[in-house]
Amino acid sequence: TRRVPPERDEKILTSWNSLMLGTLAEAGRILAIPRYVVAAAAAADFLWTRLRNGDRLLHGWARGRAKQAAFLDDHAFFASACLDLYEASGDLRHLGRARELMEALETRFHDPAGAYFFTPHDGETLIARSKSAADGAIPSGNGVAAVALLRLHVLTDDERWRTRAEEILRLYHAAATKNPFGYTTYLEALERWTHGPTEVVVVGPSGDPGVEALWRAVAS
Image (tube, rainbow, N blue to C red; front, side, top):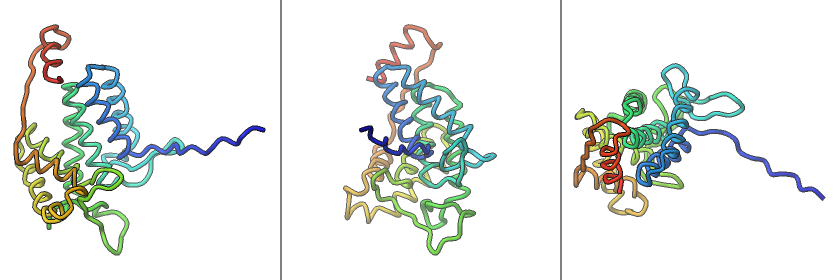
């Protein structure tokens, strides 16, 4: 007898795909496998062109169309992935996208008391809006946002991003102290803030043997 094939979940989520394409970009850079970076860039282009309504990011794609307003995770994860792509390729387009995504997060999700709500200000009216930095099955949106904000500050020298990251670090410090295993992404941001960045700038024409050798040395 022939078995009935199982149903397959074919929806494309901005947040989950961003985690994957960010990892692909980083792996391609470190392992010197260009096709990984190319695949990550193609995935990012799909999210940027198909999962948006005007200038607003959308959450998911299914049956040929995108729908539902994006959440905190979608913006933070995609911005972080774009920064990974920028570091892997040097393409300023990815840096520009990361800045635009974080500007949207600032405008539509920021809580004056610190950190970002999971849902946008103009989203569905809820009894209570959640705001957490604890990791679960996937990293915390606020944790990833804090890391991305610190990275953006280094790349753009815009103090706003560092200020927002520090808000998140202050707000959840007590909770992370009590339960560090539940706040690993937060702790990554705290480590970046505490120790500061290591900046390496490689200058030269693409494809030049000397420049490529420098890229490989940095990646290793």
